[in-house]
Length: 301
Image (spheres, rainbow, N blue to C red):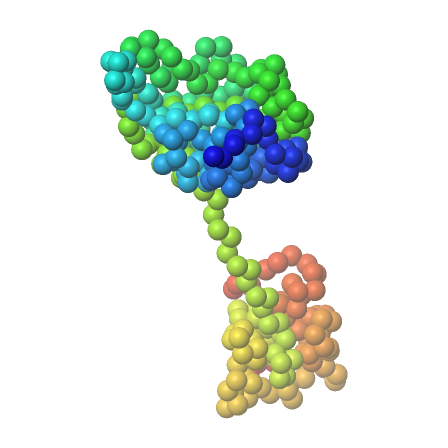
């Protein structure tokens, strides 16, 4: 027989005590929802979420990792017990948000979907909340009541970091207005809190041709007439890729060619760089956009 100890393990207690950001708190809450941690403060030690919550664990985990740390939720249900007791539930969730962008996105998405929203912070306080569960037609459970300092201390006793993070955050409750099963709330949570996968970093452009030293990039026309390093994978300019393209290095504006202040490529003008690309790469002057022109040097023969 497995014994369920009535206290949180020392290792998990240390993890919850070490939380330093609401994102960290959300990651631990998601791990508890997914069964990767046995205990959560403000919940009976070594017990996971209720059975009715299990189908919605993936969405709740996304929400917690997306900046909305949930403290309670329930699905919409219509149920009658064997003794005839009738239960009517609205889908609902409540939790804490500190990121103003995540907060606004949740509120906007919920309101556009027709859901009820309750915001509690220093400027908004709700005494009664919204009835989300009816027992034989009478209110049994409410969501959205403001949790004051006393409530939070009871829930998070012994975890001062988490208590401070929640005390400084916005309390947000989202409720389905209709009783019974509904997917709207869970769709809103998934849509509003899913963080986009960052694109892999783009490789740095090849500035200097590996063969001749030309430093133009695509649209930047090098002063010697070369059209620049257009094939980044190859790393060579068009003249070096195609030997039939000839660059006339003999057209001098003055007696001696200048050398680019960045790459050293010879060019025949009085400016310090051979191209806009080198000017940008060296951090000199404003960035110019495609189509911008510089004083032209010798043209291709």
